[in-house]
Amino acid sequence: MAQEHDRQPDTAEKLMSIQAVEKIGLPDGDVGEGLEFQTNRGNFKAILHSAPDADQAVIWVCGARGGFGGPGPGTYARMSQHFTEKGITSLRLDYRQANNVFECALDLLAGVAFLKGTGHQPVVVVGHSFGGAVVIAAGANSSHIKGVVALSPQTFGAGMAGEVAPRKLLVAHGKADTRLPFSCGQQIYDMAKEPKEIVLYEGAEHRLEECRDDLEGLLGQWIPETLAIEINFTP
Image 1: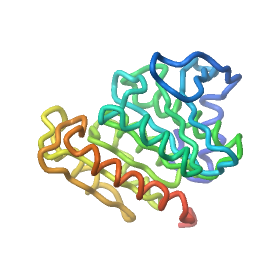
Image 2: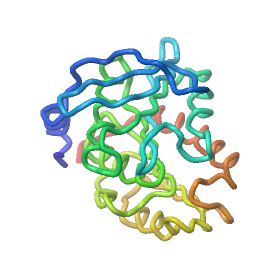
Image 3: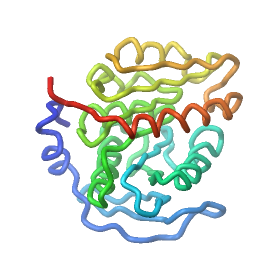
């Protein structure tokens, strides 16, 4: 995965290319449009929440086990529906090889390429736990990503936090997290360059259920604000 901005799109496309995107059924009780991405490295599934005539979008990825659940629980599904009503498309994305940061980052970059190909402007990417490292790795390697949100992130695989800038970075972590201590989020924040922000929630565990309403309020404000700004990648 290239680190130089002017080489990223070509390099990412050489590593992983989308061959087809087909509609599939949704998991029970879920809403949106089920998709299967067929790529030269294997297939992965996604759920698209498409806002009519939207050119803004956000992608959501989960932890080391993959799937579509995310923190909250249910935060990703609720925020996707909320943003659809606000004219912002959401893509909830599963992994081909869960718990492999490099391969999962390629999945995310394929999702970014898909949204770019459907007319969307640079996106915000959101990842929880292991997914926090995935969005940092992908975010540092794509000029079509303008904001990165790491929720309860792990540090392993997040070594490119310093390369996320000039994209905006938001780190959110619960101070009662017993799976990944909030020092992980603090370490990622310390590695990163401005613009960056960290929010620590008292009494919140790894899934951030205890601060769900506050977290969703934060995402509901931070993501649209980030999508609205211009990013200059010129050193």
